[in-house]
Length: 323
Length: 281
Image (cartoon, rainbow over all chains, first blue to last red; front, side):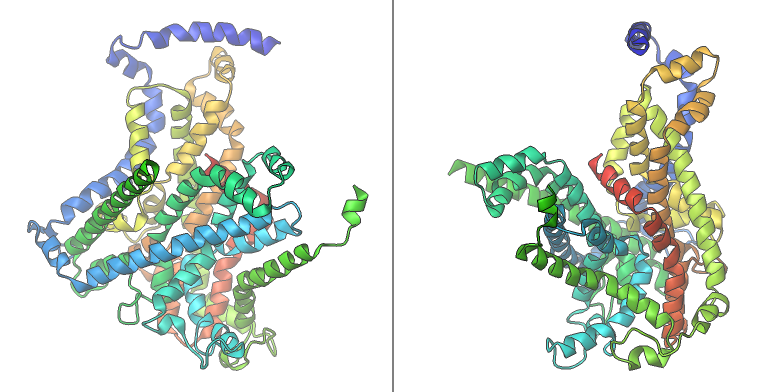
C-alpha cells in the first residue's frame, strides 16, 4: 500500500524537469556531469578499441606498411587491385563462405532437432544430456584444435573406429588431406558449438505456451503436423536471430582452424582470418596495409552478399505471394 | 499419477535414449580420450588402439608440462589476464548500463545506435589497429595491454544486460537514498550495484569464458614475448616445438581445460541460464 501511494507523488514531481528539455543543453550537460563520468570508461575504451580500429582499418587499407615500427606510405587503391588478382585471397574468401554455408545450417538444424527431443516431456535424463552437449562450449577453441589433431591422426581413435566399422578402407587423417581438411574443421566446429545453439533453441521453445501443445493434441494433430503448423511458425523469429548469431560465430573460427590445420595442407582450409593473420604477422616482411585491405574487402563483400540474399528472398516471397 | 510414473518406458522412449546416448558418447569421448592420453606414454597413445585405460598412469606427463614446458607460468598469465578482464568488463558495463538503463541524457540515442551498429563486428578483423594502438601506448608485451585489448572495447552484451536489469528496478530506490543526502556515485555503489548481483554473476561467467579461451589477441600480443603466453598460446607453441610429445601435450591440454570445466560443472545451472537469458534479451 505504502509503495503505491508514494509512487504517485514521485512521478508527479519528476515529470516537470524532463518536460523542460529544450531549455539549454549547457545546463543539462552541467547537471548530468556524473552520467558522463559513469560513461567515461565505456566511451574511452569503446572509442579506442572498437570504433577507432574500425575506422583505422579503412585508412590502413590504402597504405604500403611493412611493419609497426615503420610509417606507412599512401598508395591509393593498389592493395585492392592486388587483392583482386590474388588467388590466395579468393581461395580464403571461398573457404570462409563454404564454411559458413555448410556449418551454420548444420549447427542450427542439428541443434533444433536435439532441442525438440530434449524439450519433449517424456524424454528422460534431459538435464544430463544437455550438460554433455554443452561441455565442449566452455572449452578453449585453440586447445580443442590441438587435441583434434591427435584424435584425427591416421592412427588415432577417429580413423581407427571408422576402419573398424568398415566406413573407410584404410586409416586416414581428414585434417591433413587437402580434399577434406576444411570439412574436418567444419565437423569439429559444429561439435564444439552445437551445445550453445541447443541452449538458444531450448530457451526459444520455452516461450511456446504449453496450452498451444495441448490444443494441437485435442485437435488430433500428430507430432509432425504440430511441429510444422504450430511450433515452427512460432520459432521463425528465433530462427532468424539464432542464424544471425551463428553466422557471426562462423566468421570467428581462427582459433580452431589455425590450431587444427593451420590453413593447410596447401591452403585447402585457409579461411580469411588465417589469410589476414599470415599476411600481417607471419610473413618475412609484414604487409599490414595489404592485410587490412583484405579485412575491409572481405567485410564489404559479405555485407553485399547478405544484402543480395535479403533482396533475393524478398523478391522470391513477392513472387510467391503474387501468384 | 503414480501409475504413470511406474509405467514401463515405451519403445519410443527407449529409442530416444539410445540415440541420445550414442550422440552423447560422441560428445564426451574426446574428453575421456584426452584424460586417458595424458596418463599414457607417448608411444602407447597411438599404439594401443581404442583402449582408454593406461597400462600404468604416467603422472610424470603433468609435471613435465607444468615445469619443463612452462604451463605453470602460462597458467598464471591466463589467470591474471582473465581476472583483469572480468574486473574491467564488470565495472565498465555496470557503470554504463546503469545510466543507459535509468537516465535520459544528451547523446544517449547516438551511443545506443553506435552499439547496435558494431554489435556483430567480428573480432579478428580489427586486430591490426588494436595491435598498433597497444604498441603506441607502449603496452605491447604487458598483461595490461592484453587486458585492455580484451576488455576495453566490445562487450556490448554485458552493457545491455545491465541496462535491461537496471531499467526494471523501481524508481523509489534512488529517491529514498537521495533524500538521505547520498550522491549518485554512493547510490550506485551502495544500493544499485549490490542489487544487480544476478547480472554481475552472468557477466562474470560470460567474460571468464571469453577471456580464458581467447586465442588470437594474446597470440599476436605475445609473438615477441614468450614469458607472457597464455595457456591457449602456449599449447600451440608446444605443438610446434615438441611435436612428438603427445602425452605431454594431452597433459597440458587437461591442465588448461580443468579450470573452465570445473567451474562449468560446479555452476551448470547458472551457465545455462546465463546464456539462455542473454539470448532472450
